[in-house]
Length: 160
Image 1: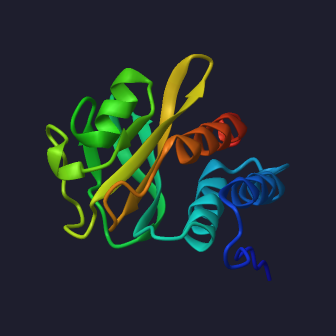
Image 2: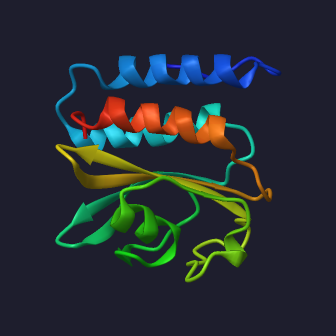
């Protein structure tokens, strides 16, 4: 059984180093993208403090479709350009949102969510999925979180 829970008070840089190493170990050599997304969604849930949703949306037939996640039930389909996830998928750029209620077109799948970080997963220059992190705390995510999730997205680009 895997136990990836970080030590309490672990500095963020160390937490993300450990998270990336664990994600690499869990997905290396596994060809099933759904299995890899499921393990990484669970890993994010277990390792990141102050989150209420961690998971993936996959880009299929021109829209985002819910992928593996941890948290409360979520929206199944999201149009490109709509909400934080749709904005990330349409632009191919990370969306770091301190207050989701101030984000134009925000989709409230969980009323508890106050802030969000969405990072596109790119393969050969095209968005194939997004990593979505939600938090019940305002301004939970910062540039360091975004950079780490961008590294994770790069790691997973050929594994999901």
